Image 1 (tube, one colour):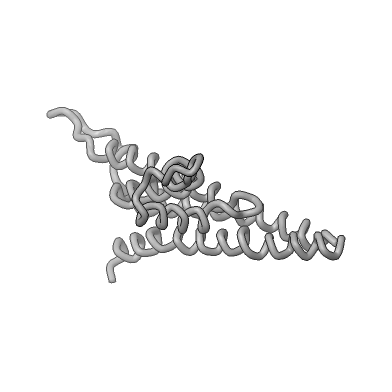
Image 2 (cartoon, one colour):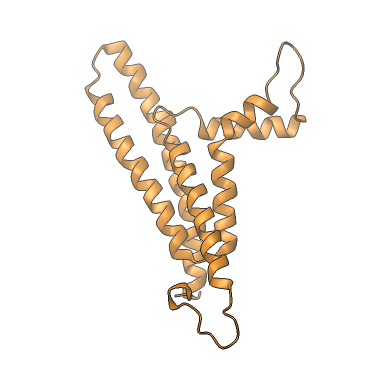
Length: 169
């Protein structure tokens, strides 16, 4: 496999792994530790785990940004921006399109309601908002990469040398 393909594969799969880890840690492990702390009145483990959660969230966000910049791919930038926006606004989308209001059925059809419910389960129920933070980083990194690729794609007028700072690496 070529170096470019390897880079794209790592940059495409990396955020998926990070989101899965953040979802498990934030939504399952911390919730279980909070319930244990409530039952035993001993919150030492929870406080330590929350500190680790914040550290892992920032590390995940920085890693997503680094992977996006490392990949040098407009298509991957678009994927990062779309997936990041979808996860970041999962709660809003679910509330607007997939919930019943005053007994009226949801606006969205059943498959969309089911998809938004699954998305809600992945992104929203965390104790620290780790998935949304990483999703926000992916959204911003995707927008930056799209902008960078557009700038790299511009050509200089005839007779002028292009700006070497915009040349692809």
